[in-house]
Image (cartoon, rainbow, N blue to C red; front, side, top):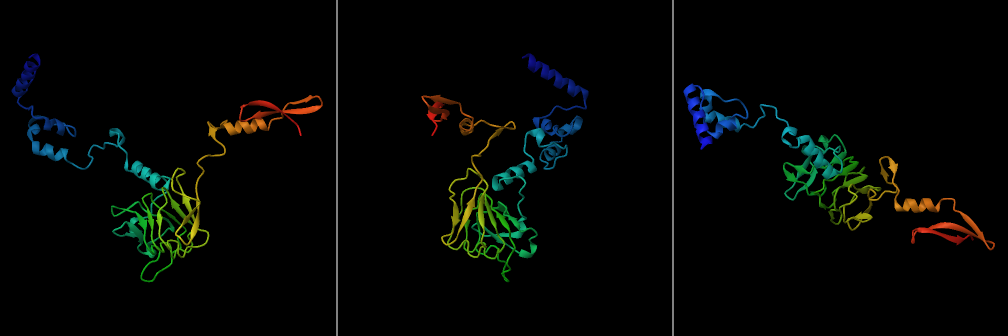
Length: 277
């Protein structure tokens, strides 16, 4: 009851003042952008127009509202699709995409960098494959000096003669699982072509990638390193400890004319003695 009376007193005082108007919550919403007082506060149409604006008149930053910037979002997508935020996709206008999501070079004369990074989307459509004859430009079937092709993670099929005409191609770079290869996918490729898998945990890969006729070697980063470092120092892994102990100058004993050497038993995880041969 006391709260209601206090609110009524405030409203009455405001009305007596004459130039202030207490109105609906919509006015308070409008006040997020600019102070609304006096007769202005009753202009709900203007308030609505302000609250539905699509620009950013007050310069609110993404960090202030806990959102990712476009740059951060793109960097995350590039890391997901290509393994690094520094690998930048080639311009969409270099490509065509069909109704099945397969891409091809649209016009070789427009290409300015032959390390091709296939975008994960073209015209809002997800890229799902490399089309047949993707690197032969019609009507003249111009061969293209492509050296490497980075595939987005969504590529799941390589069509027939997909790389025919890419006579300098040496590296196909994948991020995820291996794509479906059709008979003749590698027709016309140069000797020495390899498939590089960026993600060391990607599954389904063997030592080669084959279209049924031609197989190319698969290169993968090591999932387990020979040397592990923590804080700049080499970590003492179990194998490292075992090898270090084995390589130590072992104590020697002579018993009844037989020389014995101490060694580390990796099964019992303790020292033992053995005769020196």
